Image (tube, rainbow, N blue to C red; front, side):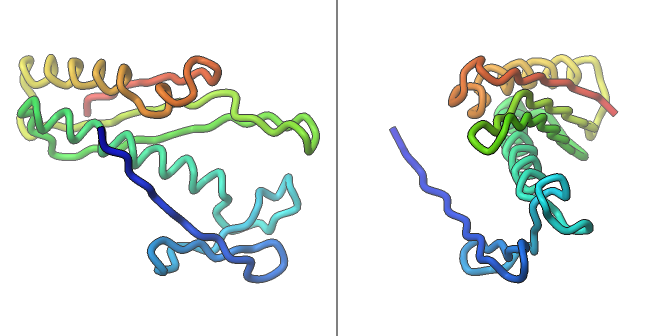
Length: 145
């Protein structure tokens, strides 16, 4: 069994803004949400988290699709995260919603069936679901373009 370690770094930059680094490469300047005293016009850590989850689902779908010989022309995943704040002692994610938009190289009934099969596997082996269990509802939607 393999275990991987992934690391990111956030360094306070100015006021409440931070610079975010991966492998010593700056990828963004972020600010907390305006609701938490952050500055408008910057991505938030929650935006970055949602984008990372979307990218993870893209990778997972691509790996499964590749094994299924599904020809993909384009793939986009949108992750929406709901969060509830109940004071400083309780800030929790309450829901994650993934929408996967896929377009095939060749749109046939067979490719659509393979896509739905891949989609079912993605839902079953989603690392977020396996890590958090059912305590945070996770929904999935597949749109064939």
